[in-house]
Image (tube, rainbow over the protein chains, first blue to last red):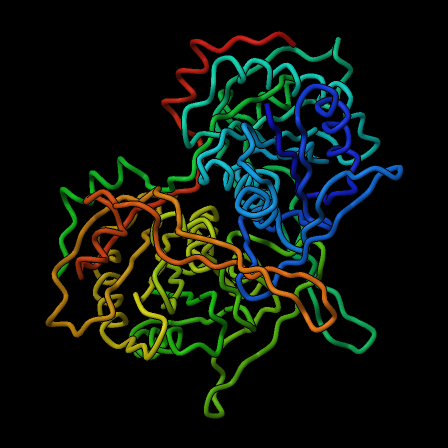
Length: 253
Length: 253
């Protein structure tokens, strides 16, 4: 099996390396990832600037290709241009920090997986639920088990898995929850500051979720120490609303 | 009614101005938009850089606020910080060029509308199906009619409308199609070049769609000279796959 690893924390991130260490001995493993951190870039792609590609070495050995672009760019150029043939699966991560709820929309990690799904490949996004002192070892091992399972059962075309793993010792993890994406709004605000030249600027701050969350969601599962797995896709159509509009909504040209 | 206008082509774009001219005489109209063009940035937000806000004047009169950020940033800061109370509806556009099929994922225009929906507001994204010599006048008039209709019937919470308008004289437009987002892949490639310093770089080129498209999609409707309207949302969960995984997929911790 041929595995493509990518992420949004950049090619030098330890979360990506933790996956490489697990998969390199087992499969033909390729690394194509953004050169620098690309958190919260969502599904941005670079159409107005050229993409540079750089070879990256680790301990004197070739590690992968760094892309001066976004995670979606990295997935696209890896699949279309860098790899001689498409990988069998794409893994994006392990992200430093969770990707649950409406944060999926902002997540470069998730977008690299979605982009791969658009290109017809099975893909998973993996995130660890902490921003500091991360220990990626259990998450990497779980990812290996998940890939072995997917290798047998396959993913439906166009679907990728968004996986969030508690930052807990293996013995403390409560189980696995297949859950839906929460849609509650974020607790967010803008902090107004003045620069040394007396000009105003704002910092955007997102800080958890605003409301109590349903028990069948990714946010809830993760908060309970469960691994959350959400099958996601890239069709934004709201089908019930489409049916209702088709039936009821009339407007003149 | 209070209307917030935004876009991804930047606050100086003629497509935005065409909406302003139509809505300013009718409603309390606010403009908060990116300072510079932000096409293909998707749902990116600025967490690592501060946001500057600048007042923009047209013909000596206050026009709106320019944000040194993305369309999603503009929607967020407008709603949370700049406007004294939330608008009744958000309109993003009129975009220069269509936003149909998987391009929705890359579209800043659509993301500004989706972001507004996340924040609990009715929102529509409007795009004109041409990249050159745009005449926004019919599209702006149609948007006005659509807003008047929505003012009466309301949009379901969390839903926004993605509207694509043919670049045709009003008399040539064939009708209105409520359609789903096409999911066929793009025809895309990377063009490899060498810079004057002998270093390689790539241009990413997306050029239409790869396969024939289903007749109930936005791509098809627009290609037939119809106005396409697609109700979209921000829950990426694939529910049939979720049900199947919950039933059938077992994996050890």
